[in-house]
Amino acid sequence: MPKPPKDITCKCGHTTTLETSKLLCIKCGKYVFYNDREKRRYKMTTFYTLALFLLAFGFLTFLFMEMIVTPLMSGQAVRP
Image 1 (cartoon, one colour):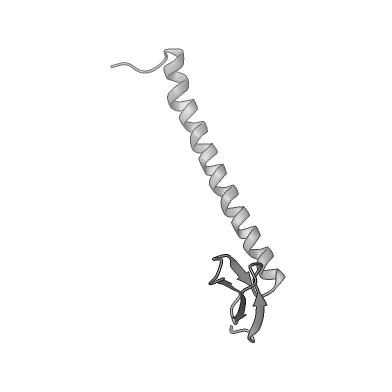
Image 2: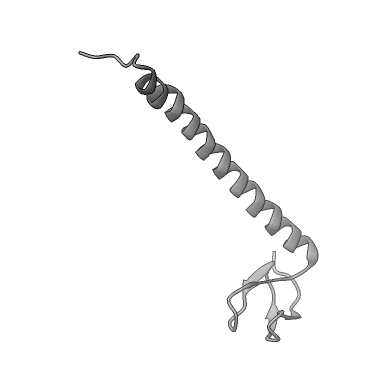
C-alpha cells in the first residue's frame, strides 16, 4: 500500500522523499526509514536472522565435535 510522500533527512544530511517503508540513501548507502516503527522492525528482523544463523552454526559445530572429533580423539573410531 503506497504511503503519502514524506521528506526524510538521512544522518549524512541528504534529503529523500519516501513513499515506501525504507529506501537506501543515495549519498551514504544506509537505509532511510519512513517512521520509527519500520526502523524497529528492520532491527528486530536483522537480530532474529543473525541469532538464527548463529544457533544453526553452533548446532552444526556441536554435531561435528560429538560425531567426528570426539571419537577420533578417544580412539573409538570405526576402522575397516
